[in-house]
Amino acid sequence: MKITDDELTQLLKGMELEEPSMSFTRNIMEQVKLEIPPVSLKTKVDYKVIYGIAAVFLTAIIGIFIYALANADFNYALPKMDLQVNIQTEKILTSTALKAFLFVDLVIALIYLDSFLRRKKTEKA
Amino acid sequence: MQQRQTDQDLIIQILEGNTTAYAELVKRHQRFVFTLALRFAKNREDAEEIAQDCFVKAYRALGTFKQTSKFSTWLYTIVYTTSMSFLRKNRLDTLSLNDEENGIHLESQISPLNADLAEKRSTNAYLNQAIAMLLPDDATIIALFYMGEQSLEEIAQVLNMEANTVKVKLHRSRLRLKEKLVFLLKDEVKELL
Image 1 (cartoon, rainbow over the protein chains, first blue to last red):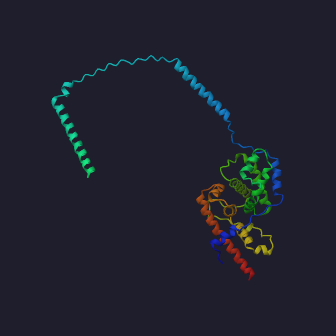
Image 2 (tube, rainbow over the protein chains, first blue to last red):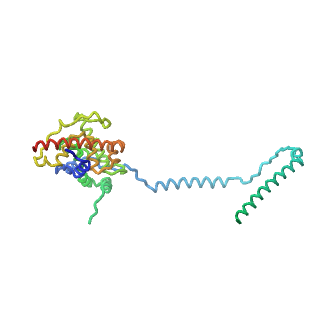
Image 3 (spheres, rainbow over the protein chains, first blue to last red):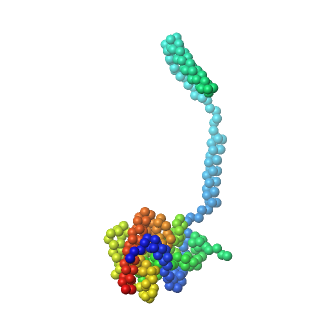
């Protein structure tokens, strides 16, 4: 004898639930009456209290800020700085160095000009 | 036409002090809770005691119900733990949830059905008898899935295990049930011959 999976599923889905005795609900309700009524353990949020606390904090912060501004001394002078920089520029900035610097600049400018002209040529084509 | 109140509405009413609303909640779930308890207790008197105990426990703990899951799932968790406690108290040998191989069969504790011969021979009666021959955990998973219309995730929540484990257990429970059913129906064919 064989039972297929589908047949078994159909049988299981078609099963009826058992029925307790007629006095079942009444018996429970009688027991329940003797119990302390349940109360939600979720804390009720009173927004008035939250807004009140927020207002106290805001007032305190603004008060302190105003007090600080009123007592502040805005006369402020920049501190004097005396930097002792002693670089011998004559030794670094020689005429050869300047010429080399200008030559490199010229080469970079020529490379840029070349790439610019090539780009224009391709755009036209 | 008055719209049917949801479980959620009834719970809110109860928590606000209308304790009579609990009767409606009991009526809605009593059949399945009783059926589930019957899978553990094997006789109607004990099953009814377990079911009543579950509803009283649920009433006491209603304030702690977080309403993140269905009320039925939460209630079935209570039924499962209460039924397991009942089995332990009555010193019935039960199978560990994680032990598949060391099965202790309950055939010897099953009283023959008192229904008449016609009912006995009906498929439903045989199916009930086959389920009664299963281990309580197997019978619970089958009952929750097919009769309680609980998802694998919800059953996992009730039994406090992973959904994948429940899936495997459900498959194995079905195989065992099929074996028992074939065994019973074979006997029936012999009886008829």
